[in-house]
Image (tube, rainbow, N blue to C red):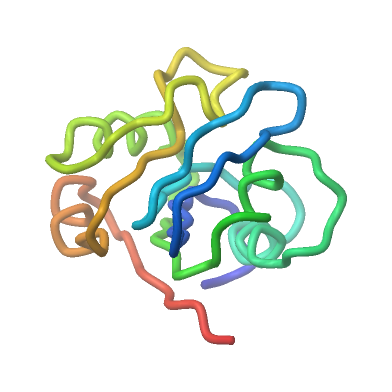
Length: 144
């Protein structure tokens, strides 16, 4: 992963069920399994800086994902350094994938997407996603 602009899908793991208050937005019911959060990083530091920020547990809370991080652990990320914003397309692709459950309204208050957060009970399939996403999509595994 480079400090260049791009799009990412952050993969998070939940080991238990919980109720998570997402700022003043609302409370969501978390289930064990995996969550995939889609975002873009076109500011300073690009994808590497944004994914690294999301992986830190202690930080100022700015986005929905910052509140969710209190309840889930980083697992990895899928990313592309294409200069075109792909987050809305990726969110739609994830919504259409079998076994994915969108969390309505999460992370998409600034767009018309249904959701930017998806839950699946099994490890997300990078090969399948990268195949349907097209272009160059790479993966990164979180190491403690």
